[in-house]
Image 1 (cartoon, helix red, strand yellow):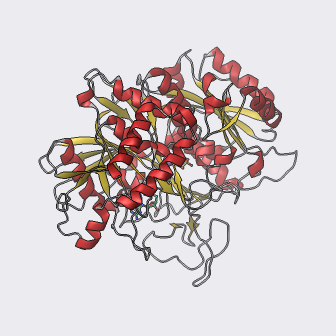
Image 2 (cartoon, rainbow, N blue to C red; image 1 turned 60 degrees about the vertical axis):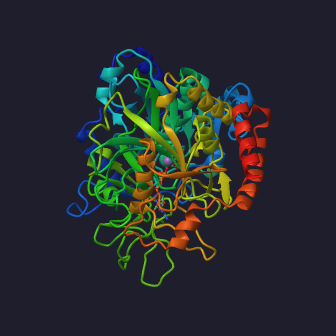
Length: 598
Ligand code: GTP
Ligand code: SPV
Ligand code: MN
């Protein structure tokens, strides 16, 4: 059936699923450029894709999804464990047997009239001992071309795999074709038939009914976060929803920082930031996922398991994030943005007016003054990391990069200051465990308002979140050299005043905060100890050339005891969800915070 591998276990597994799904044909992806061109041509010919103007956007393609399939579906995402308690109160749960019974029915014949693609992929540099190999079976060619950007994919992976073990990932869009039936541009199943299922104890992923992003590109959230977080717990490392950046100060000293912010809260932007303060430089290792392990020298090292960026398009511009804009200059897939009459793309905040006649993500035509939503708020670009102008020279270093600081943050219009530093690893773990953020468009069907998103991992933790908190505490307690643990900080670029005005300009200006964090790591910057941790002194942050009033700056750095007392009550409610599973070290941190505020 294939001459790409002799791995009998893999061949048997593919055959078994081909019998269940009954595709018209089975195709093993080699990852070549020729194959990629062929699939792109096929999708253009079928009307699934539009090739963009080759002069403006070389080798780039445009897709519109089905209106029901625009983001992750958290209420259709399951962690399947024997005991419900092992999935915990924040995950949807079903027993593996019940889920497999339901899904086997759905997978039966689900690829009729379609091709089954077999995608061997590596999360992490090929052959690195930190990397994990998965094989995704899918009936979506869109998934194939996206996986080719987001992961290392194809024959080279099979060569490294040899006859070894792989993580099996089954995916179907759940839209079989009857003989003669005309296909649609973006086939998928209705929301209530979508299932994004994980079986952590057997390292399996079964995803049905969606073709979008994290639901369908199974290396990303499903493998590199949900399954990997469970593996990391067993094996003593960390799989996190974090960007990784390198920052160099004017003296040429370089440090690496990892940062966890919830979906659509600024990871891509921070990872590619261009500092506004002279002499500083930021380079990108990754923008969404970090796998971290202790090295022989006792430092925590991080790799980016991905090979591309699946980034939020709206409000990405030459002004906010030029490095992301240029990562998308060529070889890019655009999904749910606007398509201009001259074969280019458009979204809100791109930096120029929407051209007359632009086609919206829903296929409507935009004319000046019309209220057509041109790009979906969760419209995305899929771009190669290697096309990013500020990619770090060490981004594919199999050993990873040493992490000096870990940041947490979210969209908090009030209460939480621009930046503060934890007193210890345990205190930092507490800060991570209470991350809150205003809900964004990255997931479907969430009520508006601030929700707790611990460690930005709420939708991505493959086991009981309270046990995950405990794992973080344990990492600190069992670190080979506690003096080498990263320092932990919380940042908040999203403070607003009563009128809704941003108090902080964000984007490149966030370098001022990174510089303070950098200097704290080398024992330089000034801070005062408050009830919540170390906050910069009024002149601790470099504000030279910054257009922020002194009053706003004071507001940004203020710790308001009354607001924080109210916050403590909300934290108690949040912790109550986990009953007595909250680690004692975190209950102690909460008690300390409460007593310091008294
Ligand atoms: P995921 O890919 O969903 O995990 O998102 P992400 O965390 O990488 O978010 P991203 O950097 O794509 O930012 C999402 C949105 O936040 C974009 O619309 C940005 O313009 C906006 N944003 C990012 N950084 C800042 C900032 O410093 N200030 C403000 N006000 N907005 C920001
Ligand atoms: C997120 O929602 O955090 C993303 C986009 O990074 S997706 O890959 O769709 O999950
Ligand atoms: Mn993400």
